[in-house]
Image (tube, helix red, strand yellow):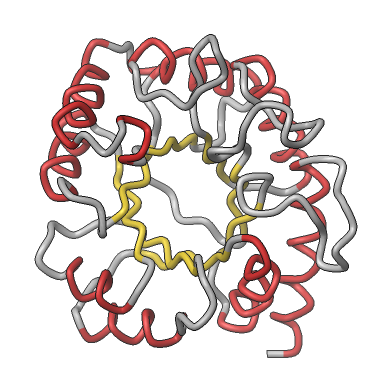
Length: 246
């Protein structure tokens, strides 16, 4: 999995269809959103595949269709997917089985990487299955405790330092990762009101970040955005400005 220098685009997340006019759900919509985001400067894309109803899905057919569509428009761009436990109703066994079934997909339909939250049960087994599939693991850490727990798991190439709620110190998480001897690339991002402060902090620290309609529907000034590509352009401006004065 190649490192990300500045920014990954998170195209849709778990948002409901229609929550934003430009929210991509179908494979064709994801492919167009990815193409526009990459043209705006994104170096990788992260997406949540959907089924025919627009619901998030880990089913092999839905994952394969979404990844293949994005690959057709962005053949040189790494593509990643979620493995969020909520998608299977927090059923660890069902999630494990769904991801294991990706083994039946041709290589071009397999994602390059998948995000796995350390705090969710089944992290180690799922990471091992992804490794067997040749899919790199992004470990999602939300707290210093998550960062410490990661040290007992297999090494991962990228750690997502994800600030999801106020009061969590990203610097404490980064320090805990260092103390635990975790060597994977760090990517720092936030969600909702914490999104733009984390983009700015990532720039000051020289860490890559993430942006997209998964994380926010507004720009740094609070104004609504047209879509993922606009968020990518705005985030690169914020990141670069912060980096230049660091």
